[in-house]
Image (cartoon, rainbow, N blue to C red; front, side, top):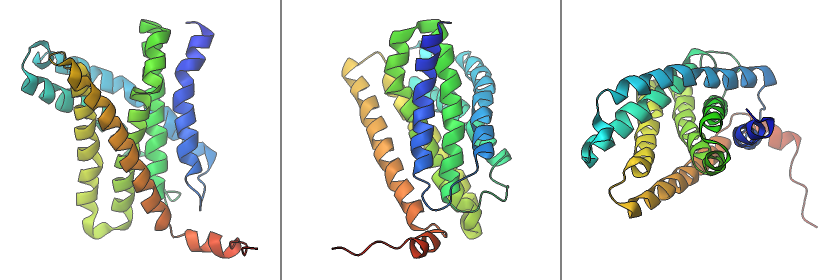
Length: 237
């Protein structure tokens, strides 16, 4: 593969991972767990591809039936991709000591999601070339980031609110699967061209919602008061 094409394919995931990392204002995570999560996200792409391949044997996406296509988008595509990232999140960072505030759910979920999106982008680059990668830089890769933030928000809550742990763990996989499926449904359907615009609206909604969830976790960070006490705002002149 052309080295320049590889760089272009990798950059969006790295950039989004860095931007989300910067939102962790009060207690930065160590580099090694972040790198491990990114790699786990890349590895999660492999079982996801097999799950999607098996799902195609159902034949739901080959018919003009929008209901079956919706089921395919949610159950096959959305679930196959989100469940592997979700398992990686629970298997590695969730039970570690460095996962010590709700915000960490967003940070580590995003690292996993961007690892997933980056390898997926590299595979698409080798198969479809530059035009597809440039489109995905503003669509599929940010979508993976938004879904990861939503998943990480609820997984983060689940660790520190044990009385609602099962509910939050459920929402941490159900909502990303559903939103991912809705997003892909509008892209995959070919019956009504105007419906494809709803994929953009879904992405914008998820991005906005994800940003609001980041702000909520920033506000409840147990490390916030320590930092603000150590570095108080300077008085206005």
